[in-house]
Amino acid sequence: MSSDITPFRIEIPQAALDDLQTRLDLARFTDDVPDAYGVSVGRVRRLAEYWRNGYDWRAWEARLNAHPQFTTDIDGQRIHFLHVRSAQQDALPLILTHGWPGSIVEFLDVIEPLSKDFHLVIPSLPGFGFSGPTTESGWGTVRTARAWAELMERLGYDRYGAVGNDAGSMVSPEIGRLAPSNVVGVHVTQIFSFPSGDPAEFVDMTEEEQAAMGVLQWFWEEIGAFNTLHSQQPQTLAHALADSPIGLLGWNAQLFEHDLDDDFVLTNVALYWLTGTAGSSIRMYYENAKAAPPPAEPTTTPIGLASAKGDFQSIRRFAERDHKNIAQWHSYDTGGHYAAHLASGVYADDVRAFFAGLLQG
Image (cartoon, rainbow, N blue to C red; front, side):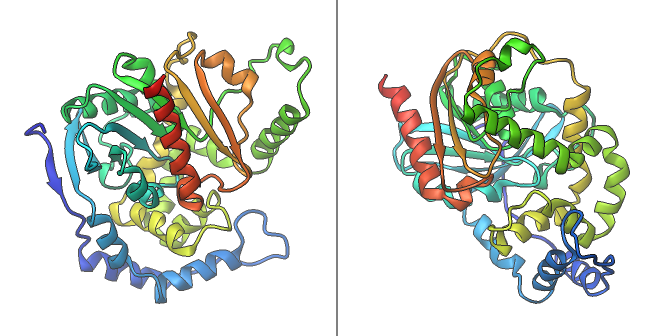
């Protein structure tokens, strides 16, 4: 391991927890209406009350600290990551990337089953959690993928897989594009390939594809406003998110499914609050929106999809345009956007089977 990598332990000062408690005690809630018009007051009140009087950050801090953690500086930015080595010395390394409003907490439930067969590297995205705040502009998908390739090289891994969810489903294929001789395969829970505008792409669409298009249309028309705001004026929103834990809770909760347990939701939100990264995390959307167009050439590293019902529904005809080596396409009735947490067994089995197939092939 490189000498530039430093052991790390999460130790949030008690004063920061006391300040959070005071802010929660003094919270002001907006008025209520019969129709939610977004995240309901009832849901935010219920989560806030548990955050005040039941949620135990120290217990989750201890759970995170049960895994080896490190920091290193890459391209001028501090990067925090978990590094859990398998008992199998020759195990394939995997780098697992989360998204917004998630965190490394997304993968806690799959560390134990996956580490039986893989060395695991689980970094916090630049500007997220203990990898933030970012100190300069430019930290979008491609720069992050480049940093992840550098991280794996520093760890001595010259052959590995890339795994991702949400933003991680965009970063991971780019690692394969940037380091094709190192990345044996890419496993994602979404393939974000969209219509190009060519009418020919819509000819003879199956019922399943039409349904997926309907989900995509609903998302952009009903809850896609966060993406527009993050992409255009993240700093305007950041002032409110940095000052109010209730505001942060309400904003981030819009993309936490209702079947997620309260501890999972609050631990993710608390990580943003306690590290002061609510604002820097959403800047990733701006950076991606302002970045140069992605390469026209499709990726060629083998890619596998494990999609869950109730999540973004990838459309294969568009995915095949952007990725020329789709090695797996699975859809599950269980799970959701946070499948590694909601259906950890199914998710871990799919990851394991995907890479086993590549290594045996």
